[in-house]
Figure 1: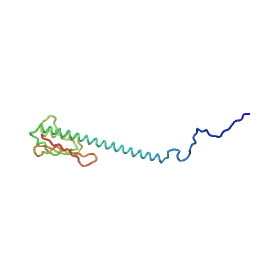
Figure 2: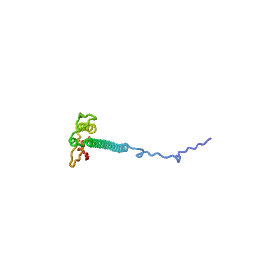
Figure 3: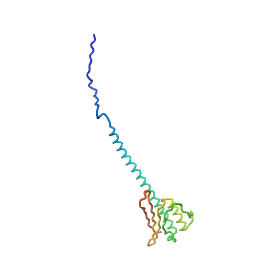
Figure 4: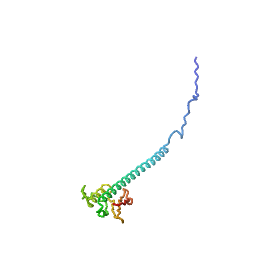
Length: 160
């Protein structure tokens, strides 16, 4: 007869499984991780929003530089009538008319410049051309951002 040995011993290379509290992630740990992730995503969204605001502000500032230097050049071309360019305007909600491309004169230059200001700046912006002492002129362009913050103003002073 064959004698079979029965062994109830476990092999030494097997690891006993622990059952109990440390068997995996709990629902609370997963929820905490999701809250931390959500806060991080909100931070990224806020940074993206601020980046868009700063980008738009830089765009407006560059448009103002182009507009101010363009009007300064027009005034330099018409030095004899430079005083006729002085005035204060608010950007309207409808496109201003009266601009004839290629025509010469302060009235036409101002009409064309107002149209350019209308196309470049938001409604309610201001554009001032002021004659200073000593023959200098100052062009001040102001705008209000989308959030309704106080008007920002950039001013250029030059000799025609």
